[in-house]
Every structure is written in C-alpha cells, then in structure tokens.
Image (cartoon, rainbow, N blue to C red; front, side, top):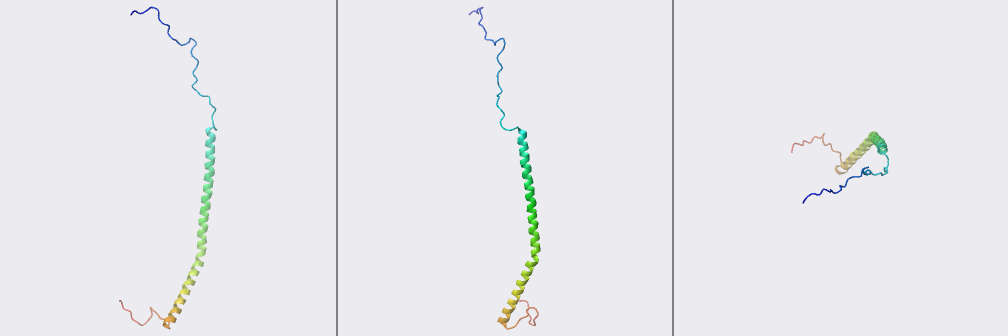
Length: 116
C-alpha cells in the first residue's frame, strides 16, 4: 500500500476556541453564615453554664441548711434519748422490785463471784 498524497482533514478545535465549561454550580447558600451558628452555640452554652452554676450554689446552700438544722436538733434528740433511757431504767427497777421484792446491787455486793 502506498500512501496517498491527499490527506484526510483532521478534526481540530474551532479557531475562536470552545465555550468555557461550567463546572461550578450556582446554588444559593442554605442556612445562616457559620459565624451566626457559632455565636448561637456560644450563647446557649453560656446560658447553660450560668444555670448550672446557680444550681450548684443552690445545692450547696440546701446542704448547708440541712447540716445546720441537724446541728440545732442534736440537743432535742439527745434529751429525747435521755428521757427514754431514764424511763427504761425505772421500768427495769420496777420489774426487779416486783420479781425479787428488793433492789439488788450487782457490783457492790458482799457475795464473791469468782472466775468461772
């Protein structure tokens, strides 16, 4: 085969060039700017920390109030315990008098109790 002198026309780009290819999408931005979201998040967190701090202070104050109320109630509770012990003591003495006919002295008696 012999090459021909007539060559085929080559497919070339147009002389003025192709149109530019649109690779960007022209979509409107959705939502707010990121700085607005950051500001809103900071405000919400500041409010949350404020409420948390107030809650901690309130909790501490309630604990302090509970502690002082218990401190103030100690004498009343101690007096109630003392009255109960005295009542039990007199009830034991009455029961012993009823059963034995006399009151015995356990530690200050003449009876010797050796080790057993």
